[in-house]
Length: 422
Image (cartoon, rainbow, N blue to C red; front, side, top):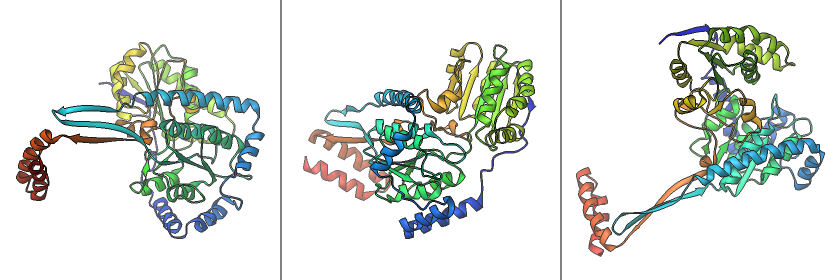
């Protein structure tokens, strides 16, 4: 296997940060002890917010009324695509019932969690799409109570995010971000129900809070900085590939982007073009993208498409674009990615905002073992069983013998009660 690095990363995202862990641990402890009072204190200290935490119905209506009609139409367009895809996912989740042996019936049910907490980032960028992705998917899954939080700006959550939250069906909307937002949803503060699962992307503090609370509540995944990989051959456009990489580097200085190519001219052309595209971005986007490109980006040259596919699977990117010949071959061959974008006509930007499949995806190589947010994450697959007297007798005999071989006499006697009763 011949692999050549034309550009290597000079820095790697930090996966361990004891300072963040200590800060988050203290905050969660204080909020668990002091509840809403502690949350309000953190809101004022960290965000400068002293207004209401929970949005009233009047607040919602007023915020929605201020959103321009064109923006509403764009949000509804994305919402409908996301909802349709989530509904298609749900249709694949069947219940079943089978006679395992004569007289023994077993089955599977799909039960949504009772409550979900959806975190919508709102720091450098206002992530309208994250509200659509998380709340819509929970609603389609059948979750009866959904709480949504997002960091406040000068006048609270931006109106367009409130409109998206309201459109998707959030039951409670809270002017909260960061660790305090995660903790409030987990505990069920400010009129919300305690969340069974916490979902949505966020900064390193949000991610750490979710990690620490995992076990008491479920989480979608422990997400690190977003990452993207493009596979391109001689048929790809330098300009298109370069923009697809630069646009993802825009997420932040710690967001790696990678190019794997079987064509040296294409790879070198992208490297030569990247800085000019970055320089054309407004600030602070340009600085974020420039740092990500200079420190985290890698450009890899492979001899064959099989080598390229193997390298991609090794990286297991969150987002994976293929701009190459024979797209069906790549679809069937590639096995480790959060979401796959096939052909020059599509782009991660579509998936990030409007096309339908969820943009809350595994990062930092986690695509090796898990997929992204879906209706499945909000649903418990549970089993049940019942048997008649004949089956009970047979099961009791076998169970008692196996139990005694394992040294579990109590299990054996509980089983034999059924034998004696029949």
